[in-house]
Length: 353
Image (tube, one colour):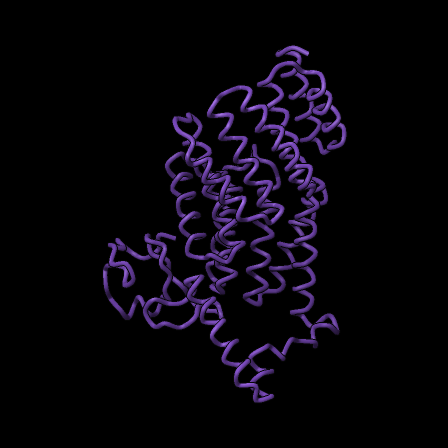
């Protein structure tokens, strides 16, 4: 199969995939992979297979095709293809929760010299790295990576990348319990979909709606949460996006628990390690749990640099400065300084993220 025929078959597969004929698209692409002698075409079809298996939740197969794609990129001896291949390896490991490997592959991407595509893919690399740091609960590093990805998006007018970063920032702020920002960023993603997303895959709308549903639930707006989750699930079912279907099901369960619809909602975890040890007078074990808690807080830098209180124990409004240090908004307002209280770098003005 030559170059022109390979290109035609890849396009045929894309048309089938976009019309939700996923299995037929996979069959077309696998035939290209078996019969084509065009290395560039093989590289491109492997990228299609990586994306398709990602959206179907078949992450081990996604990783398998990403490894073959890297081997093809090495045969091509082209830095741009290597960059794209390592990014797909990073994404595959991110989906498999191999976060340390994800970060390692992202660093490899950033270390590749002289790639023409770096301006386009650099933001995606930073986003994948941020998601991995978030998975490891390294919140400071996650926020720094998300900010880099946003800068790439703004500098290159990449609304699609900005949409994805906003959804990740929604997850970030949900985890640190600033629920207003956890809602703000997915709403921003939804605006981008409405303004620019006519030619995008519907998965971007589904993704923003899911993150809005999570934030609405955390804020107690259960009707809005249900509406957004239903919209996301409808799209996920249409496109066979099994990972998103699973997330929506979990969100539905959380909404129903919040409403008190399930008897299980009455069962809460009251006996945490500290309270158990305290009630039984196990002072040695209690001290060990308290020390470990504060060690984790220090490791993740998940505390306000002004008042010293932990961030994430309750819903509170937070503010991130351009240097990525996080504070309670009330503490910054009361402090009145124009530089970061932690690193003394000029903050310009609060609200960078």
